[in-house]
Image (cartoon, rainbow over all chains, first blue to last red):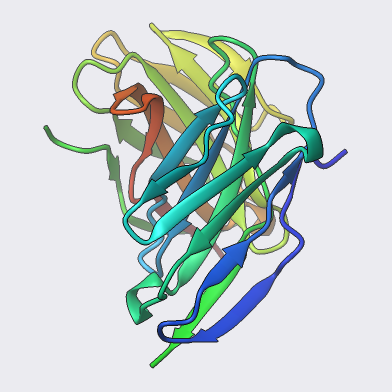
Length: 115
Length: 114
């Protein structure tokens, strides 16, 4: 069964529009960690954020913000005032348990920001 | 602090050959994980090494193997290459970041099997 679902395959927006990427996860563990990574055309996965299951506080980092809701098993990511440099594939990932570093990735969402 | 390095960056092999990829984690990190990324299957976990021991393994055939050295550098080996092994192989080094444990990825090795 898919542990991380990113329902949006592709999103295309015009610069300065906001973009929200959905992520729904599935786990039976009470301790788990959620991640978002950005993969630009160069291929390297760039770490954006890590959130543990006990911290439901939303987070904002510059133009990026994350909304974690355990009640709906979702960890959504919003880019405010998008820029062309935000064009990339974004992955949501899950690791379960304490000390288990294995990541289960979603299929990714390709974001294209047009000038 | 230097990032995660992977060598080589690009590799072309033919079916039946074997290949070895290398990953040097961030200094001080003891855990290295390997992932395979393909257009069809996405990002899939291969295995994780911690202090020279394989601690976790994904669902891949025995042709895929790895090891970790005392300096935490890791290698993965794929024997009897198949066309379907063409992929981007990513290595991750696990360590402490500003928000707790983070996984830092290297630039990847792009393997093409002809």
